[in-house]
Length: 163
Image 1: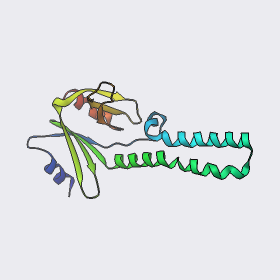
Image 2: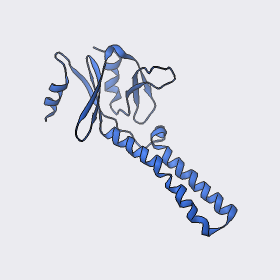
Image 3: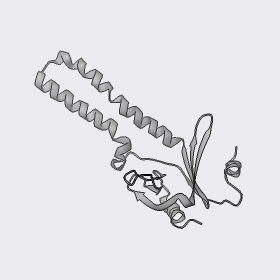
Image 4: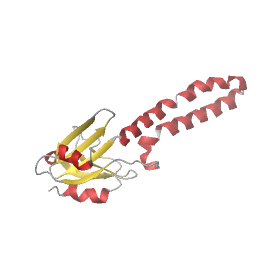
């Protein structure tokens, strides 16, 4: 399927495509919520191993640290799965709605949000920046929007003044 055929199937009559993009998170300290758990777990286990070896001095018991070290795989797997989700995600903004695509092996899921549901855009300091423009049901919950956008300068004018 060509790109134009795809958009012909997705867009409604008289709907114009204003912007498309995809998340491209970078390895950066600003993205600690995404990349942080695995390195922090590894550092914690490394410090625990050093403390155990320094206090007990039993080199034969080092094998007991192998099991906790395997626990690092849990946050590492969660980070890997989230990166795979971002790889399969695409965003689009039209003159009527915001579209969120998740492209799977067998299907493509689309979530559409009309402009009437959008709030004032809020830029988040991630690398590259993220923007939220859909409010959650509670004030403390973070907003929903497009994450890790490299072309934020091209997107923001369309969010601030929907056509």
